[in-house]
Image (cartoon, rainbow, N blue to C red):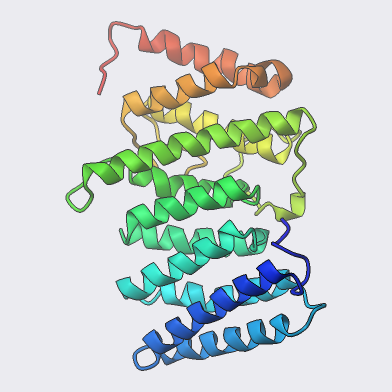
Length: 291
């Protein structure tokens, strides 16, 4: 993805660099006493930003990837104030399309870990949605971790209110739709993903001939079927249960809004015939207990 500008000479880019430097100065002050390692990383980031800002030929892309480190450190601090601030700065970088595939993986891993700790869940959902909607960098296992983080928040718990669960459900619907939109665009030749940007799959049960976006869509659909059947997901590791009605909503979205994918890609037709149809027949059985 391109940044605001390829070089730092652009006025809008310089303004953004100034904003980033101010963010890191604030973070440096906040972490000065309790987290000296984060403060040191912030100071290094400020220096790199300053050098890049004064060099008309410097590439912003490389600089931004380097300055992610103190933000990730801040998210690991367990200090809610610092975590919230770092997520805000990460959102700035995402919105400016200043993160490449490697940076996206770092961000998703950071969000995933925070999600496991149940920290600032709404902020995590916002960041994940922003990353997915402003770039096409999240694929493979990185996408799976993003989906798992969001899906875990769908069910209410003692520490999670209903509004967060509703926001999580809306985010999952949005991400599923986005994945299938990209798979269709890829099939039509309108989108091409660099295989080098895709993290190697650890639980890939998709046909080998599928392209990256189609693989993502195939694996998500396969797991939606698994979950509706009451079985644990294969690809979305850690998700063993979702409300059946929610799973059916996701399946309905795929079948209704993205039906062309079943005409364009043979592997999806096979999935429809062998698994979706069998699922629907089973659901109409009088012995099925709905939950």
